[in-house]
Image (cartoon, rainbow, N blue to C red; front, side, top):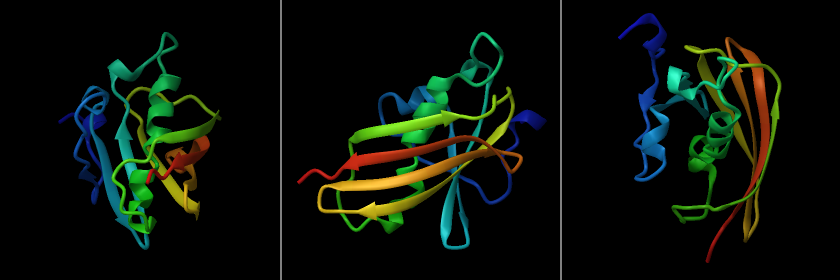
Length: 137
């Protein structure tokens, strides 16, 4: 494992779902107090032509924010289709960066989950996002 590949202490691999998840690379999770934080290492195959993490990769990670708040969700569904995802790209994310995703469950209704998250590199916010997910019956 090179210095760029090193995973910070306390992070554990999240099991990849079959399908698209296996193409993204590893996503990690860590318990921090009452919350869980996701972690992700940007690799060469995540880069755009400018040499920074592609917006599509960051959007995929934004859509994974429910993994960090799953213990707070009362519904016992295992899949919550995305109804809406808003994302603001604030700063570029370079190759090799360790990206952390901090999410909050804002509200749960009978039919919808609402959440928001920030992505940080070295404690600097690089992406912010809000999302709505469908609770199927």
